[in-house]
Amino acid sequence: MSETLSLIVSSGTEDKLESAATVIAGAAALGKSVNVLLQFWGLDAFRAGHIDEPRGLAADAGAAGRSLAAAGRDRLPWAETLRQAKELGDVRIQACSGSLETLGIQPSELDPLVDGPCGIAAFLMAAEDGQILFI
Amino acid sequence: MSETLSLIVSSGTEDKLESAATVIAGAAALGKSVNVLLQFWGLDAFRAGHIDEPRGLAADAGAAGRSLAAAGRDRLPWAETLRQAKELGDVRIQACSGSLETLGIQPSELDPLVDGPCGIAAFLMAAEDGQILFI
Amino acid sequence: MSETLSLIVSSGTEDKLESAATVIAGAAALGKSVNVLLQFWGLDAFRAGHIDEPRGLAADAGAAGRSLAAAGRDRLPWAETLRQAKELGDVRIQACSGSLETLGIQPSELDPLVDGPCGIAAFLMAAEDGQILFI
Image 1: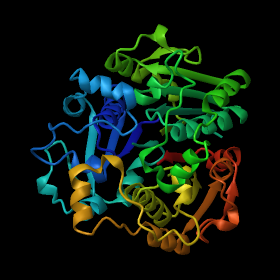
Image 2: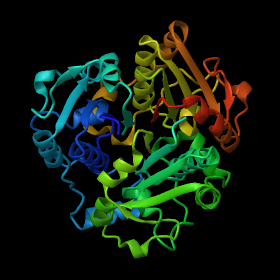
Image 3: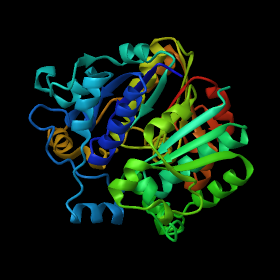
């Protein structure tokens, strides 16, 4: 099995972040090294002091999403899942340098879950021959 | 060529499901084993009795999407493409256990196209060294 | 390191196209062969004469996206980044045959950045054992 799994997380809704956290935690539990690069709204979700705010669901959630929201079940445990995955496995979460600049965010303004900034070339090199997902 | 192609399908619009079905059918035609994990709105699209309902287009469809809808051409043949791909090739479609629980869906409520529930770790193990896409 | 990176670009917002351009340029700078397949709204963004039009941000951009738009910084340099990546590296951009037909676009109506039409099976074969992302 490939030893490295890499994810670029560009989306910032509860469902997409939950999908990312599920994959990250699953891969970490299998003993893989997991490298995550945060871009755009995925990066915005990791601003310090905002990570536990509600983020809403994707625009295509439709009737199923409205049911979840109406039942007050549209908050998903992605941040807590990621905290546990980082404690138990080899998970590195980095902020894409280009997105930091575009959004005007300083690395110091990010949640401690984020290990630091990273350029795309360094990220792709670390991804080596492993699998990469874009979420 | 890699023998396995895996897809996590989280989106539930006609265009994203059509992209998924196109990739799945193409990979199956090349003789690959295809493993699909349905999450969130991608899972919701496979509820029994609802699979042929219109699902709408992605929010970023813009003017091109409005033209398609106005011309009555915004229904795409993804479900039929998947049925044919399953008949002709090695295609397994599974429902993510976590999403089943989040959405409150029982495996028995899913279309026969879905082979059963699957956890993320088992899915990632089956994905082995092959390619994975997140749609 | 894997020699080939393949991307299916189905989304057509400024942020998703910028993410795609960033990955493409980074992979090309590392000496990889990059194969891109345009589908749906990602394909629509490459119509000749329209490639420099504003495309808007993803629906999940939220407050960060509204800030960018209010500051007039929601236009991103993806098209220029792709032009440079094609000049400096081995980057091939193709239009998915199925999406051309669905959207009623002729190959001749596409920007010169697009090298031509391509079917999904040929694209997956060229992707070989390399990494594939779906954006």
